Length: 179
Image 1 (cartoon, rainbow, N blue to C red):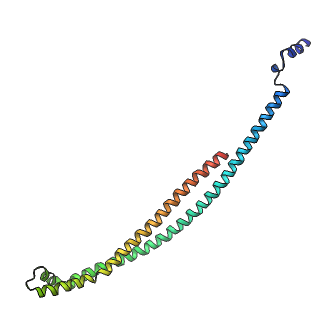
Image 2 (cartoon, rainbow, N blue to C red; image 1 turned 120 degrees about the vertical axis):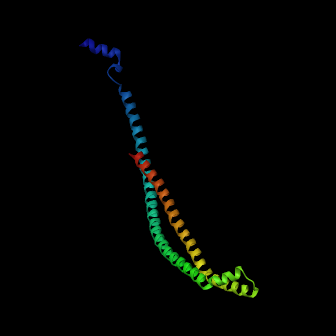
């Protein structure tokens, strides 16, 4: 037995493990790594907090845009009903203009022999046509308004969805880093 102890002293401490100094150094390295990991985790938590706040804001903004989109769709529906009514009025006016003008007035204008008759018929046709200018302008204005509402509602929603998706990816990435 004595021989085993003597041999172990001669071979050195490496055969039985690390020396107290090596153990102390290893422990110090682990403490430094622990502090670095703690700092990294804390930084990831802070990043997650910032990203979560941004994500929450983006979510609320997107919800607001979706509410505005729903309101815009209601406005769009009202404009669409108004447009149908204006088109109906325009169509009715055109039919009435055709009925009132009669083919005789159009024939006189197209195949006139007497310039006075052609002038009277032309003025009559112009008056009947002029009565349809306002309904036509109403239809054009309503169509323009509908385009504006549709583009504003859907463009804003598309932008909000894209912003939300970007923040969602950041949030998922941040939670993954923290995990």
